[in-house]
Image: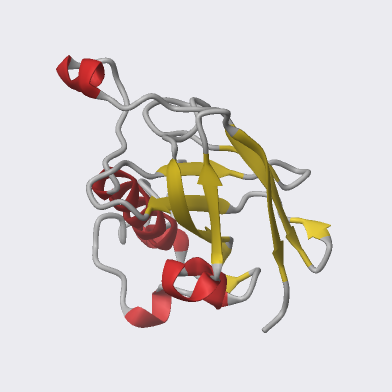
Length: 166
């Protein structure tokens, strides 16, 4: 039995959309020759001095039309940015950043279960569960997170986001 969370799918889709809209993409297609060079970029996310595992980190370039970068934190809160392919870093630029770690509580998963009669139907609001933010919600938006970093041609392997309660 396969189960997919509609909220996770929605969250995942929004993350992919942000990734795509920021000019990022994978593959080595025809546009690969025109891509800007990337440089090593990594860091750590801490919340109340503890590592944050499984958070999504999004870097949005402050220069319009330039690609952003994304990452997911590991058990130690560490991340490595990706722009065009996994772990390739970020372009040399200034970025604003956001960090999100959410789960869905109380969700009726029967709407995502391929063996359920509810599969494929639009779940009612009461079945969608509640999104729980594991870090303060202000960090999920670049306009309120107050997070950012600059990546130079030398790279930046010392990005440190120390998140605190509101």
